[in-house]
Image 1: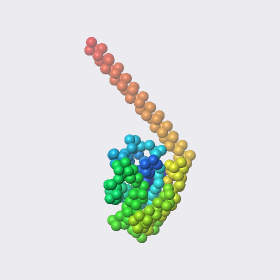
Image 2: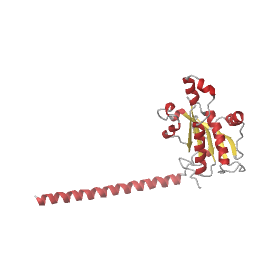
Image 3: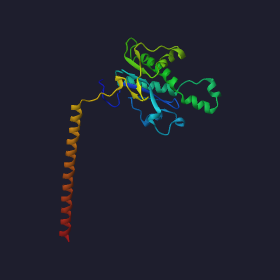
Image 4: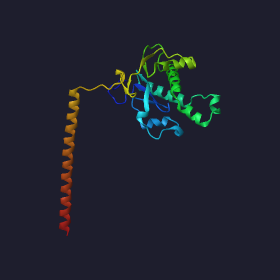
Length: 227
């Protein structure tokens, strides 16, 4: 499958965003989060609207070779997050403390991501022997050690880890995630096409107006003759 490298929504990339205030997490295919992504969050804890200044990427994954692969990872990960295990102590907490724990999904997401990629191997959607197929970019590199520390899990061999470079906490600076800027000639050609299209649309509208006026004039003439 060939991916459009200049597409607004790259289908070979998966992103995890964290809320800077609540530590809630959104998962999205392509680097742009949308209001519909909020449906991933339990309704009782869901923000009323998406404020992009409250969300920052903390994991970015590139290198998926098919849409089915990135979609499978997305679905498995979301399922892991929704059905995360809860300790017996959780049910003994006060409600306000439980709400805080339900919101803080950063660590859960990292663990779920490692498990999701391992599931791809189990389902034979990807081979463990493939080297450096996926690149995971981390806002904080220390996070990559969580699966080993918490669950004793290693990342699959086909994963390579890199530092996620951000500007103002939201703008991607890694070349992997930058939009390819078109040349001046390409931008000029596109502008010319839009200009020609607008002229065509204007002429078409003028023609339709003349036809309508002619029809109205004909109808008026018929009415006068009838009288």
